[in-house]
Length: 224
Ligand SMILES: *Cc1c(COP(=O)(O)O)cnc(C)c1O
Image 1 (cartoon, rainbow, N blue to C red):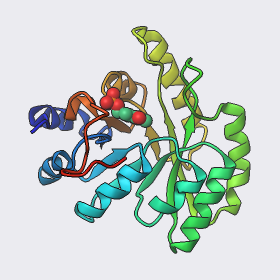
Image 2 (cartoon, rainbow, N blue to C red; image 1 turned 180 degrees about the vertical axis):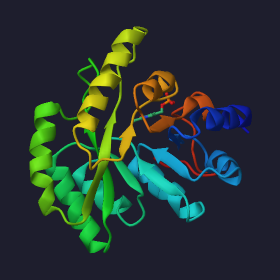
Image 3 (tube, rainbow, N blue to C red; image 1 turned 90 degrees about the vertical axis):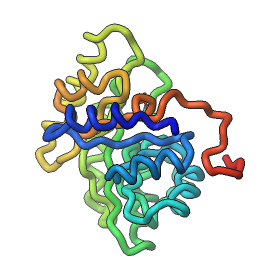
């Protein structure tokens, strides 16, 4: 068993009253998810559509599945029936698709807008100007509920940089009093994120150990 149970309980204590813990289980076997589930964990985060669909099919139905990866419009339909919160909404086009699938499934799909706060070019997300445009367009989407913002800081040893990036995200968040979720903070930077106002952290490797992308996540199967 690769799950760090002690870390899990100390983390819960640390986060109590401050932030919701999303256990990021991407690439990890369903046994590891079940182990945390048995301890009471219900919120899990996944990055890959097919992987989340496969895991959802075999795990308890009261799990809250958070899609935290980059979501392609043509894959929304696969997760729409069961997804709890989409963290990475980053365009009007994607929201339109989520709205369509929400409507088909007769549900309102909760979403966070991903904001680009890191220096790295590779990270997805909106800038402040694009955020305004999306906010101006989202009213029409009756089957989408925007609950807040999500962001990833730079992978950097420069803690001031990371803090500033989180602080930028907090300012955008507080400009929208209708929002209630600020998803920021991962294994390496969640302490700073919470100091900067995060109320939802996405933590993987601290709980499940380092990821090995070549191992199958469903026992006996090798799926991608
Ligand atoms: C993988 C991932 C995480 C968790 O990362 P760790 O460093 O393992 O805690 C959090 N958020 C997103 C968007 C991720 O892709």
